[in-house]
Length: 290
Image (tube, rainbow, N blue to C red; front, side):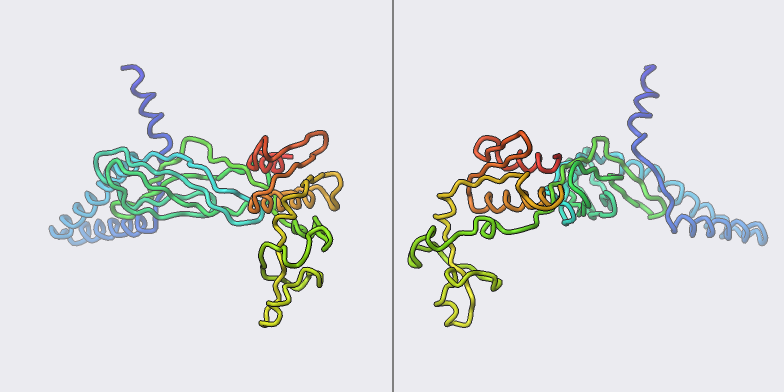
Protein backbone atom coordinates (compact mmCIF):
# COMPACT_ATOMS: atom_id res chain seq x y z
CA UNK A 1 0.00 0.00 0.00
CA UNK A 2 2.92 2.33 0.59
CA UNK A 3 3.78 2.16 -3.11
CA UNK A 4 0.44 3.51 -4.31
CA UNK A 5 1.36 7.23 -4.25
CA UNK A 6 4.53 6.49 -6.22
CA UNK A 7 2.62 4.44 -8.79
CA UNK A 8 0.02 7.19 -9.10
CA UNK A 9 2.67 9.82 -9.77
CA UNK A 10 4.42 7.59 -12.31
CA UNK A 11 1.22 6.90 -14.20
CA UNK A 12 0.09 10.50 -14.52
CA UNK A 13 3.33 12.41 -14.77
CA UNK A 14 3.31 12.08 -18.59
CA UNK A 15 -0.17 13.68 -18.75
CA UNK A 16 -0.32 17.47 -18.84
CA UNK A 17 -3.10 19.99 -19.11
CA UNK A 18 -3.02 23.23 -21.09
CA UNK A 19 -5.64 25.94 -21.24
CA UNK A 20 -7.28 26.94 -24.52
CA UNK A 21 -8.90 30.17 -25.66
CA UNK A 22 -12.29 28.69 -24.72
CA UNK A 23 -11.21 28.43 -21.09
CA UNK A 24 -10.77 32.22 -21.09
CA UNK A 25 -14.29 32.63 -22.47
CA UNK A 26 -15.69 30.36 -19.74
CA UNK A 27 -13.84 32.36 -17.09
CA UNK A 28 -15.23 35.64 -18.43
CA UNK A 29 -18.70 34.09 -18.61
CA UNK A 30 -18.52 32.93 -14.99
CA UNK A 31 -17.27 36.34 -13.87
CA UNK A 32 -20.08 38.09 -15.76
CA UNK A 33 -22.74 35.79 -14.32
CA UNK A 34 -21.40 36.21 -10.81
CA UNK A 35 -21.39 40.01 -11.18
CA UNK A 36 -24.94 39.95 -12.57
CA UNK A 37 -26.16 37.70 -9.73
CA UNK A 38 -24.47 39.87 -7.11
CA UNK A 39 -25.91 43.10 -8.50
CA UNK A 40 -29.48 41.99 -9.20
CA UNK A 41 -29.92 38.81 -7.13
CA UNK A 42 -31.78 36.94 -9.88
CA UNK A 43 -32.43 33.25 -9.19
CA UNK A 44 -32.20 32.38 -12.89
CA UNK A 45 -28.72 33.91 -13.03
CA UNK A 46 -27.65 31.87 -9.99
CA UNK A 47 -28.94 28.69 -11.61
CA UNK A 48 -27.12 29.49 -14.86
CA UNK A 49 -23.95 30.33 -12.94
CA UNK A 50 -23.91 27.03 -11.08
CA UNK A 51 -24.77 25.11 -14.24
CA UNK A 52 -21.88 26.64 -16.22
CA UNK A 53 -19.50 26.14 -13.29
CA UNK A 54 -20.49 22.47 -12.90
CA UNK A 55 -20.15 21.86 -16.64
CA UNK A 56 -16.71 23.45 -16.78
CA UNK A 57 -15.55 21.62 -13.65
CA UNK A 58 -16.69 18.23 -14.99
CA UNK A 59 -14.55 18.63 -18.12
CA UNK A 60 -11.41 17.81 -16.11
CA UNK A 61 -12.31 14.28 -14.93
CA UNK A 62 -13.88 13.31 -18.27
CA UNK A 63 -10.95 14.67 -20.25
CA UNK A 64 -8.42 12.95 -17.98
CA UNK A 65 -10.28 9.64 -18.27
CA UNK A 66 -10.27 10.04 -22.04
CA UNK A 67 -6.56 10.76 -22.51
CA UNK A 68 -5.11 8.41 -19.89
CA UNK A 69 -6.45 5.41 -21.84
CA UNK A 70 -3.98 6.20 -24.63
CA UNK A 71 -0.65 4.39 -24.94
CA UNK A 72 1.93 5.72 -27.38
CA UNK A 73 4.78 3.77 -28.97
CA UNK A 74 7.29 4.93 -31.55
CA UNK A 75 6.95 2.63 -34.59
CA UNK A 76 10.01 3.81 -36.50
CA UNK A 77 10.48 5.76 -39.71
CA UNK A 78 10.85 5.00 -43.36
CA UNK A 79 14.17 5.79 -44.94
CA UNK A 80 15.10 9.33 -43.96
CA UNK A 81 17.51 11.40 -46.01
CA UNK A 82 19.03 14.75 -45.10
CA UNK A 83 17.11 17.74 -46.44
CA UNK A 84 14.30 15.55 -47.75
CA UNK A 85 10.81 15.02 -46.37
CA UNK A 86 10.17 11.69 -44.67
CA UNK A 87 7.55 9.91 -42.58
CA UNK A 88 7.79 8.63 -39.01
CA UNK A 89 5.08 6.50 -37.42
CA UNK A 90 3.70 6.57 -33.88
CA UNK A 91 1.38 3.77 -32.78
CA UNK A 92 -1.58 4.93 -30.69
CA UNK A 93 -3.39 2.24 -28.70
CA UNK A 94 -6.63 2.62 -26.79
CA UNK A 95 -6.17 0.30 -23.81
CA UNK A 96 -9.61 1.03 -22.32
CA UNK A 97 -12.93 -0.73 -22.79
CA UNK A 98 -14.53 2.49 -24.06
CA UNK A 99 -13.77 4.66 -27.10
CA UNK A 100 -11.57 7.74 -26.82
CA UNK A 101 -12.28 10.95 -28.69
CA UNK A 102 -10.59 13.82 -30.51
CA UNK A 103 -7.08 12.30 -30.56
CA UNK A 104 -4.33 14.19 -32.38
CA UNK A 105 -0.64 13.20 -32.36
CA UNK A 106 2.12 15.83 -32.38
CA UNK A 107 5.87 15.55 -32.95
CA UNK A 108 8.24 18.40 -33.76
CA UNK A 109 6.18 20.82 -35.88
CA UNK A 110 3.95 18.19 -37.51
CA UNK A 111 0.74 16.50 -36.44
CA UNK A 112 -1.75 13.86 -37.55
CA UNK A 113 -5.40 13.93 -36.50
CA UNK A 114 -6.79 10.47 -35.68
CA UNK A 115 -10.15 11.44 -34.18
CA UNK A 116 -12.03 8.63 -32.46
CA UNK A 117 -10.29 5.37 -31.50
CA UNK A 118 -12.52 2.45 -30.60
CA UNK A 119 -11.99 0.33 -27.48
CA UNK A 120 -8.86 -1.84 -27.60
CA UNK A 121 -8.05 -0.62 -31.12
CA UNK A 122 -4.82 0.77 -32.57
CA UNK A 123 -4.27 3.59 -35.03
CA UNK A 124 -0.98 4.74 -36.52
CA UNK A 125 -0.13 8.42 -36.84
CA UNK A 126 2.04 9.45 -39.80
CA UNK A 127 4.29 12.35 -38.84
CA UNK A 128 6.05 14.31 -41.57
CA UNK A 129 9.66 15.20 -40.78
CA UNK A 130 12.33 17.18 -42.62
CA UNK A 131 15.76 16.39 -41.11
CA UNK A 132 18.47 18.87 -41.98
CA UNK A 133 21.54 16.69 -41.57
CA UNK A 134 22.61 13.06 -41.57
CA UNK A 135 23.20 11.00 -38.44
CA UNK A 136 21.00 10.30 -35.45
CA UNK A 137 17.65 12.03 -35.50
CA UNK A 138 15.26 12.52 -32.59
CA UNK A 139 11.67 13.66 -32.77
CA UNK A 140 10.92 16.29 -30.15
CA UNK A 141 7.79 16.61 -28.04
CA UNK A 142 6.03 13.38 -29.06
CA UNK A 143 2.56 13.35 -27.50
CA UNK A 144 -1.12 12.71 -28.11
CA UNK A 145 -3.57 15.51 -27.42
CA UNK A 146 -7.31 15.68 -26.87
CA UNK A 147 -9.63 18.62 -26.18
CA UNK A 148 -12.55 16.36 -25.31
CA UNK A 149 -15.15 17.08 -23.96
CA UNK A 150 -15.53 20.88 -24.03
CA UNK A 151 -12.38 22.19 -25.79
CA UNK A 152 -11.58 24.25 -22.69
CA UNK A 153 -8.51 22.16 -21.79
CA UNK A 154 -5.87 20.46 -23.96
CA UNK A 155 -5.02 17.12 -22.34
CA UNK A 156 -1.62 15.85 -23.45
CA UNK A 157 -0.25 12.33 -23.00
CA UNK A 158 3.49 12.18 -23.68
CA UNK A 159 5.30 9.20 -25.16
CA UNK A 160 7.61 7.34 -22.79
CA UNK A 161 10.15 5.79 -25.17
CA UNK A 162 12.62 7.77 -27.28
CA UNK A 163 11.59 8.70 -30.84
CA UNK A 164 14.92 8.17 -32.59
CA UNK A 165 15.91 7.23 -36.14
CA UNK A 166 18.93 7.42 -38.45
CA UNK A 167 19.09 9.95 -41.27
CA UNK A 168 21.06 8.93 -44.35
CA UNK A 169 23.11 11.43 -46.41
CA UNK A 170 21.29 13.37 -49.08
CA UNK A 171 21.61 11.26 -52.28
CA UNK A 172 23.04 13.54 -54.94
CA UNK A 173 25.90 13.71 -57.42
CA UNK A 174 26.71 11.91 -60.67
CA UNK A 175 24.47 9.06 -61.72
CA UNK A 176 25.76 5.51 -61.81
CA UNK A 177 25.81 5.54 -65.61
CA UNK A 178 27.96 8.67 -65.64
CA UNK A 179 30.40 7.09 -63.19
CA UNK A 180 30.75 3.88 -65.17
CA UNK A 181 31.21 5.84 -68.41
CA UNK A 182 30.19 2.86 -70.55
CA UNK A 183 31.81 2.92 -74.00
CA UNK A 184 30.25 1.53 -77.13
CA UNK A 185 32.87 -1.19 -77.50
CA UNK A 186 32.04 -2.49 -73.99
CA UNK A 187 28.34 -2.79 -74.53
CA UNK A 188 28.24 -4.48 -77.92
CA UNK A 189 26.18 -3.76 -80.98
CA UNK A 190 23.16 -1.55 -80.99
CA UNK A 191 20.85 -4.54 -81.21
CA UNK A 192 22.10 -5.92 -77.88
CA UNK A 193 20.63 -3.26 -75.63
CA UNK A 194 18.04 -4.23 -73.01
CA UNK A 195 15.61 -1.34 -73.28
CA UNK A 196 15.23 2.43 -73.58
CA UNK A 197 14.62 5.27 -71.15
CA UNK A 198 13.97 9.00 -71.40
CA UNK A 199 16.99 11.28 -71.74
CA UNK A 200 17.85 14.76 -70.55
CA UNK A 201 19.93 15.34 -73.69
CA UNK A 202 23.32 14.76 -72.03
CA UNK A 203 24.17 11.47 -73.73
CA UNK A 204 26.62 10.46 -76.42
CA UNK A 205 25.47 9.86 -79.99
CA UNK A 206 26.31 6.15 -79.69
CA UNK A 207 23.70 5.65 -76.98
CA UNK A 208 20.83 7.56 -78.63
CA UNK A 209 17.87 5.43 -79.63
CA UNK A 210 17.41 6.86 -83.13
CA UNK A 211 14.05 5.18 -83.69
CA UNK A 212 12.57 7.27 -80.87
CA UNK A 213 14.10 10.45 -82.35
CA UNK A 214 12.09 9.84 -85.51
CA UNK A 215 8.96 9.88 -83.35
CA UNK A 216 9.87 13.22 -81.82
CA UNK A 217 11.32 11.88 -78.57
CA UNK A 218 14.94 11.60 -77.46
CA UNK A 219 15.56 8.34 -75.61
CA UNK A 220 18.72 6.48 -74.64
CA UNK A 221 19.55 2.79 -74.82
CA UNK A 222 19.95 0.82 -71.59
CA UNK A 223 22.61 -1.85 -71.38
CA UNK A 224 21.66 -3.44 -68.07
CA UNK A 225 23.45 -6.73 -68.74
CA UNK A 226 26.73 -4.98 -69.40
CA UNK A 227 26.45 -3.07 -66.12
CA UNK A 228 25.81 -6.26 -64.19
CA UNK A 229 28.93 -7.85 -65.65
CA UNK A 230 31.15 -5.10 -64.26
CA UNK A 231 32.70 -5.11 -60.80
CA UNK A 232 31.26 -2.14 -58.92
CA UNK A 233 33.75 -0.77 -56.41
CA UNK A 234 33.26 2.67 -54.89
CA UNK A 235 36.18 4.20 -53.01
CA UNK A 236 35.46 7.13 -50.68
CA UNK A 237 39.04 8.47 -50.89
CA UNK A 238 38.97 8.67 -54.69
CA UNK A 239 35.91 10.88 -54.85
CA UNK A 240 36.00 14.65 -55.26
CA UNK A 241 34.49 17.20 -52.90
CA UNK A 242 34.24 17.52 -49.15
CA UNK A 243 33.10 14.84 -46.73
CA UNK A 244 29.39 15.48 -47.15
CA UNK A 245 29.65 15.57 -50.96
CA UNK A 246 31.43 12.21 -50.99
CA UNK A 247 28.92 10.58 -48.65
CA UNK A 248 26.03 11.97 -50.70
CA UNK A 249 27.56 10.58 -53.87
CA UNK A 250 28.05 7.13 -52.35
CA UNK A 251 24.47 7.14 -51.05
CA UNK A 252 23.15 7.89 -54.53
CA UNK A 253 25.13 5.02 -56.04
CA UNK A 254 24.03 2.62 -53.29
CA UNK A 255 20.37 3.42 -53.97
CA UNK A 256 20.81 3.06 -57.73
CA UNK A 257 22.56 -0.29 -57.28
CA UNK A 258 19.75 -1.46 -55.02
CA UNK A 259 17.14 -0.40 -57.57
CA UNK A 260 18.98 -2.20 -60.39
CA UNK A 261 19.73 -5.22 -58.17
CA UNK A 262 23.50 -4.83 -58.62
CA UNK A 263 26.09 -6.10 -56.18
CA UNK A 264 28.79 -3.65 -55.14
CA UNK A 265 31.54 -2.87 -52.66
CA UNK A 266 32.39 0.34 -50.84
CA UNK A 267 35.72 1.32 -49.33
CA UNK A 268 35.56 3.71 -46.38
CA UNK A 269 39.04 4.33 -45.05
CA UNK A 270 40.38 0.98 -43.86
CA UNK A 271 36.95 -0.70 -44.01
CA UNK A 272 35.49 -2.52 -46.97
CA UNK A 273 31.78 -3.33 -47.22
CA UNK A 274 30.28 -5.88 -49.59
CA UNK A 275 26.55 -5.50 -50.32
CA UNK A 276 26.11 -9.29 -50.50
CA UNK A 277 27.55 -9.79 -47.02
CA UNK A 278 26.27 -6.84 -44.97
CA UNK A 279 23.24 -5.64 -46.95
CA UNK A 280 22.21 -2.21 -48.21
CA UNK A 281 20.70 -1.00 -44.92
CA UNK A 282 23.91 -1.63 -43.00
CA UNK A 283 25.92 0.27 -45.62
CA UNK A 284 23.51 3.22 -45.56
CA UNK A 285 23.70 3.35 -41.75
CA UNK A 286 27.50 3.31 -41.95
CA UNK A 287 27.43 6.24 -44.37
CA UNK A 288 25.00 8.12 -42.12
CA UNK A 289 27.22 7.76 -39.04
CA UNK A 290 30.61 8.03 -40.76
